[in-house]
Length: 496
Image (cartoon, rainbow, N blue to C red; front, side, top):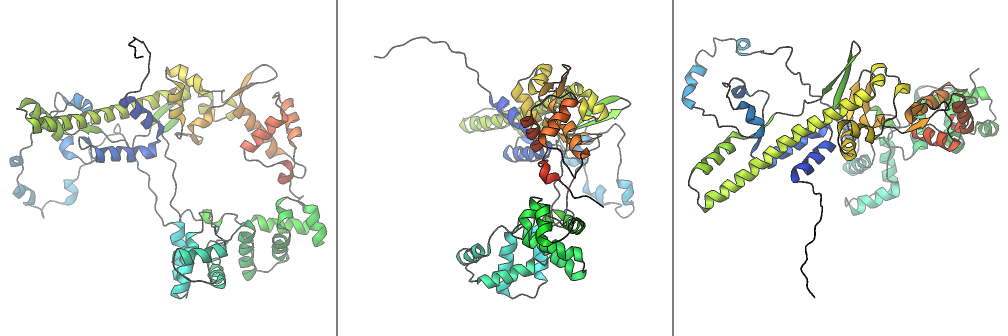
C-alpha cells in the first residue's frame, strides 16, 4: 500500500566548485600547468595572459580592472585606425634593433624560471649504436625488438625463446634462437657496459669481460670466477664457503670483492646526461632562512594569470541587452555556462594557492626549529590532525596538500608528507618523533664495526641506552623502512 509521509534528512554534498578545488589541491606544481592548458583548450571563455602581451601591459588603467579576476571585465574598444602600417615600415633600416627593445623591470618584479630538460632517450641511444653495426636487415629488425625489451636499468626483460615467438607472431619475422643470441651478444657490447644482461649476474659478468679485454690481473680473474660459480654465496655473503671452495685467503677475496664493487648493477641509470630525459623535482614551496627569520614563497612559474575572455564577456553583454529569440537564448545560455565555468576555475586556482600557502605556513611554523637548523632530531611529532586544527581545515584537505608536494629548504628538497610522523615517549617522558628514532638508528648502523655488524637485538639495546625504549620488531621495521639490510648482509671483510 502506497503512503505519503514527511521525512527530514541532513545531507552533505559537494558542489562542482568544491570538487574542482579538491582535484586541483592534489596535483603538484609540475602538473598544474598541463591542467590549466587543458581547461583553456576545453573552455574558450577562459584565457591566460601571455608574458609578452604588450597590449595589456601598455593599456590605460580601467577603474573596473580589479574585477578582472571575477570575470566582469568590460570589452576594450580597439580601433585599427590608430595604427598605421606605413609608420611601422617607415625607417625600418634606420633604427637599430636594440633601440626597439625594452627592459622595464625592477627588483620587485617576480622572476620566474622555467626548468627544462634535453637529451635523447635510453632506447634511442642504443638504436644509434645498433645503426653503426654491420648487420643485415633481418638481424637489424631482431636488434630493434631486443632493444625495445630492455628496461631503463639496462636489463633484457624477455627470454630468448620468448623473443623468437614474439618476432614470429607479432612482427612476422622468422628467426632462430641462434640468430637472437648472436644479435644479443652484439648489443651486450654496447655502452654502457653491462647493458642487455638478463639478470644481475650476467650484467656484472659482461662488465668484467670487457675489463679483462683491456687489463689483466689476478683480482679480475678471481672476481669473474666468484660471480660465475659462486654468485648465490656471494650475494648472501657466505665468505667462508667461498674461501674454502676456491682455496684462497681473506686478502685475495677482499681484492676480488673490491673489483666487484666497482661494477654498476644498473648500467642504464648511468646515462642521465646523454640518454635519458632528466626527471626534475619542481618544488611547490621554497623556505629561506634570512637572519634567523623563515621566509616562505610559493612556486608560481607555471600558474599564469587567468581571466575571462573579453570577447565572450562582450558577446554575453550584447545578447543580454538585445532582443532574444530562440537562437539568441541558446547562444546566451551557452556563453553564460562557459563564463561561469571559467569563473569557477579561476576561483578554484586562487583558492588552491591560498590553501597551499596557509597549510605550508602552518607546517613551517610547527617545525620551525628543524627548518632553522636542518637537525632531524629537532623534528616534532606531527600528524595531519595537528595541522588541520591550526589552519581550521579538514584532515582530508591537509592530506591532499601534503600528497606529492615538495618543499625546497637550505638543507635539500623534501617531500612534504615526510615531515609527518607518529610520536613516542622516551624513558624520561619526553615526546619525540619516530623520524628522530630512525635518524639515531641510522647513525648507530653507520658507526658500527662492519666486521661485526649489530643485530636487531643489539640495536634495540643501544637505543634503549640512549633513552628510546622500543621493541626488536620495531627496530626491524624501522631498519627496513630505511632500506638497510640485516646484519649478515652488512658484514664487510677486514682491511689489512
